[in-house]
Image 1 (tube, rainbow, N blue to C red):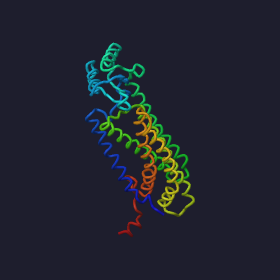
Image 2 (tube, rainbow, N blue to C red):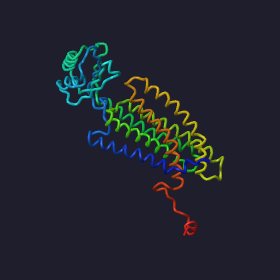
Image 3 (cartoon, one colour):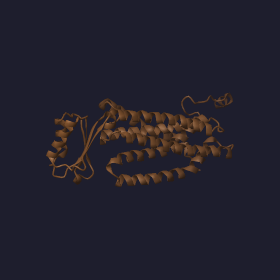
Image 4 (tube, rainbow, N blue to C red):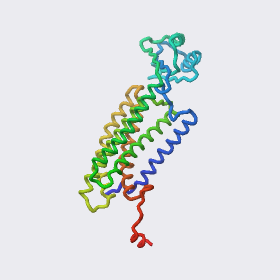
Length: 320
């Protein structure tokens, strides 16, 4: 029988090789930009202009757009092309504007080239909305931690050290959150991706999938412990992993194929959300199999810090 659990140290090293650079990237972003991530208007507040030109805008449309907004008091703006270049659709994020300045900006945009009035959208966003959503998301993760731990301890009460199962499930959950946050911070620096309410939705979805997959694995371990009394704990856990790995992979592959199709053929407005969700579910599948379960075995064998059990006196004497 192929022993996956025996290679747990390699899995831990892989996770560390992903999480530690992610933490360093977030620290670099904090030092250079003042924030762990590139924040959207959902968090910092401001105005969003979306529009489409119907005529020729010249060779450097982005520079022309920046000139318009800078002349009207915007020092920090974000200009993004939407869709195919031939469509000539743009999105500009700027600071708050009153009605008079907004009308002047629209007039100057029309001077560059005629605007399609049907596609013009101007939206004012308050930064307090993003703060409220963030607080709700943090609260949701905290409540999920308590609920998952409590549920596992109650459901696994007949298994020795049931609290370990809950703690390992929560550790895998935070593993996935850290991986996703590191990827998002890097994408913000390299690709200009911004954290918005959809990103928090993706993180919460990843948390849900990760916990569900982990509980399925732990439940199989619970079923196999009384069936294989006398076998080493590591052998029972490895058997349980091999019995459920095909189910976990098959379930996640269905979701991956759907998200890949959306990434290829979906609209630009949701591609960032789907990409983060795709990567989050990928790391969630990995953490359920190769973080939560190996942590459980490492804890049982006393390999984790503060979990090492003293060797019996007879064993210590024999070893000497």
